[in-house]
Length: 348
Image: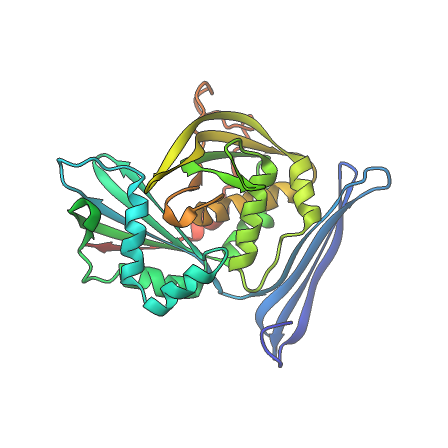
């Protein structure tokens, strides 16, 4: 169960029961290691309603290796040719560039996996093309970000457009398991999560595209990606998904329907801003924030590997008073991964 046959429980950290609005929340943590050296931890947490409430759920982080890499991001700033139009749809072309630059065997493996350990999308700002490449495992970072950040790569060719994109700079950002879990799941997060849907997002259910967002579809996608790309931890249970569905709601939105062009197909999708409000125990809000932060790397919905489903935690709603936060002044968690991100700037 733990990382090494010699690992054993060397420290039992805590066990407590926290009552919140009729819920019992129980959390246990065991430090794992050898000869008093901590190598990881087992954390199990769950909440269960009092009789008559009918609410239950679980969040189980089983074995979390100390220092294990999780998401990483490479942002490549580029300049295109002045006489050509550039937009988010370039991501489908750049996905081909990405596959050309990584190891062929690894590219072949990606075609066989259900949920890919990466996402990528394009933004255009101030005449610059920003190509975001996000990886969700250490292996994917080495295989995909490694070749793309190489100093010898100074331009990108879009063969179908007969265009060369000149690379201006590259920025690498990394997080770890500890950043996400300690900064958010173990924090005191706001009950409001403002999401910006950066590129067209869509879900597919029962063989049909779903262009109306719901808490269930969003958190189901995020949890499945989290579990697929996190070798040491699991968060998804059907019970927890039901809790997200019943205890979260889209409280505000400013969305529009769009089509994402992919070769000869135009995929129905939506774009814009929405705010999710979390009810129930504080740990539900913390778990929702952790998954939303993870979603900034993984994306959500379908075809995140070719530019769809990119999101960020960003409040863009109009009509709020200056300085007012969506939750009436509480604001967002000050501590957490934002303070611990490691960034490297590579000039092209």
